Image (cartoon, rainbow, N blue to C red):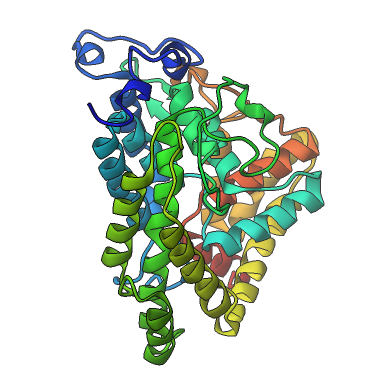
Length: 401
C-alpha cells in the first residue's frame, strides 16, 4: 500500500462528503456524461473550458516578454504544477484527479503583468474601497462568480465547483516555508480567508499542489532570467557551487525536490523535505529574490504597468453616475469603441442592465452598478482578467484616440 493511500480524498475518506459538496446540484442531461466522470474530473473539464484558463497563455509569469516564445507564461507554469503534483500524488497514493483539477485552476486569479500587476491592483482596490487584492482570493472569486459556462438549455451558469477544488485554489499560497505541511480538519467557510496562507488546505491533495507550485517555479525563473540577460553565467555558476548537489536547471531541480519530498513524507510527519533539500530551496529562493525579483532592470516595466492599470481604471471610474453609468459608458464609444463595447457587454453578465437578456442567464448577480464601491470592484475584476497584450491594446486606445 502506498504511504498516503489511507488518507487520500476518496469515498472512504471522512472528508469525502464535504470535499465533493457544491453550492447547488450540477444539472444533468440526457447524454449520461455525468455518470461517466467523477466529481473532480467534471471540475477539471469545467475549468479548462473557461476563458480565464485560456487567457493564461498570454499572462506574465515573472518576465514581461510577450514576443519571446521561450519565456515562461502563466499557462506553462500551471502545466508544470499539474505535472509535478500528479507525480507526487500518484507516488504517495493520493487522488490525482483532485490534484489535477486544483493545479489547472490555482492561478486563474492572476492578473496581467504577474505579481507586479497584482500589487498594483491591490493598491487601487485599497485606495478605492478598502480591500486588498490577492490572486488566491481572486481565483476563488473567478470560479465562484465570474467564469460562466453555457449549459444544455443554452443559459450561462456559474462553474459551481466542489469544495475541495475551491479550497485548493484559495489555499495554494506557496510563499511560506513550512517544515511540515498537514491539512486542516475544519471544513470552514472559504469566505473567512482574510490574508494569503491564513489556513492550511483542507486536503492532502491541496497540500501537494501548494508544494508543487513552489517546486515548479524556482528553477524556471533562473532559466528565464538568463534568456532575458538579467543573470550572467558567472552568477549562475556561483549559486551552482553553493548548492553542489544539483545542477541549476529546471528539470534537475524539479526531479531533486520531488524525489526528496516523496521519500521524506508520511501521514505522521506530514509533507516535508529533508534538511538538505530545504537548504537548497532556501538558497535558490534567496538567490532569486536578490538577483531576479528585485533586480533594477525590472523597474522600468513596473512603472509602465502602474501607469497602464491606473489609467484604465480612472477612465472607467470617471463614467460612474449611478443610474446613468451604462449610458455614460456607451457614450465613450465615440472615443474608445473597444473599451466601451467590451466593458458594457462584460457587465451585462453580472449586473442588471438594459442589455441583459435574462433568458440567457442562470448565474448570480454580483454588482449593483448604482453603488460606487460595487462599480469600482467591477472595474478591478475586469482588469484582473485581461491578458498582457489586451490590457496594452486598451491602454493604447485610451492614449491615442
